[in-house]
Image 1 (cartoon, rainbow, N blue to C red):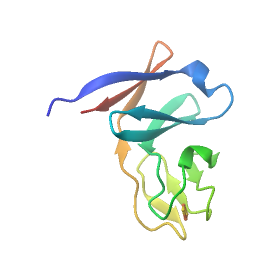
Image 2 (cartoon, rainbow, N blue to C red):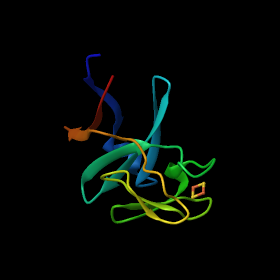
Image 3 (cartoon, helix red, strand yellow):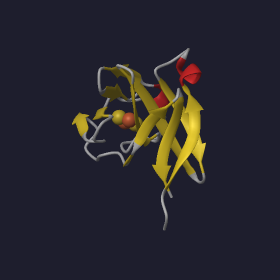
Length: 104
Ligand code: FES
């Protein structure tokens, strides 16, 4: 399947939070703004029923709001218990203050 860059948000969408969620097709994706760069992962925690966009972002780590499991937003790797399963990640970029994701 062909992958295309999709506009999904703008920098203004991060005014209230450095972690937001967007719906793209059937997926809900969390986008994180870290030091002027954007990263994207699945929004649903791999440990339980929680939205990572509601978590606490510290550097490149997102802490789940439910049990405080942690993930590296660059790789999706689980970096803190009780999270053990990595998140899916998606290529993300900023183009003229628009956030774009490379997805099917
Ligand atoms: S639901 Fe996210 S760490 Fe448990």
